[in-house]
Image (cartoon, rainbow, N blue to C red; front, top):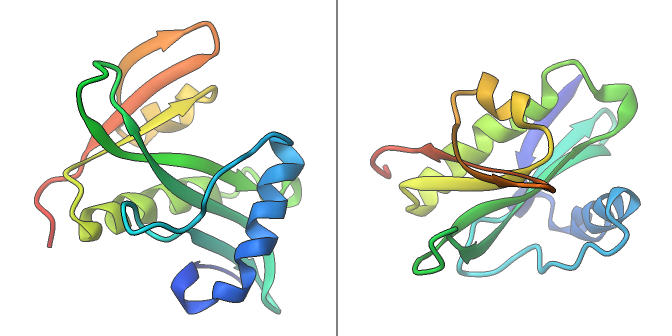
Length: 140
C-alpha cells in the first residue's frame, strides 16, 4: 500500500526527502520548510518507506513583478512510476497550496504532458522547460 502524507505528520523524514531529491538533482538546494510556502508531501510505501515526494518554494512569476508559490520538486522512485503517484502528489499539492492560501500554483517542468493531463495551463517556455500554472480557486 502506498499513501501520500503531509510531512508535518512525519517531520523526521524531511532529511530523507532532501536526499531523495539530491539523487535526481545533485545541485538541489532548497529549504523544505518555510512559513512562506506549504510543507512538503511524502509518498510512503509500507512500512514507512519513502518512495517519493513533492516540495514547494516561492519565486517570482515570469513577469518578475510578483512572488508566488511554486512546486519546487516532484519525484517518484522508478519502481513506483507509471502508477499515478506523481499525479496524486500534484493533485494533493494543489489542495495543500489552496489550503495554505494560494489562489494559483506554478511549476517549471521538463515533463509538460503530466501537467497538461492534469489541466494546468502553459504560461511560457524556454530551452530548459515550461512554466505552467493552475488556478486553485478560493482558499478554504
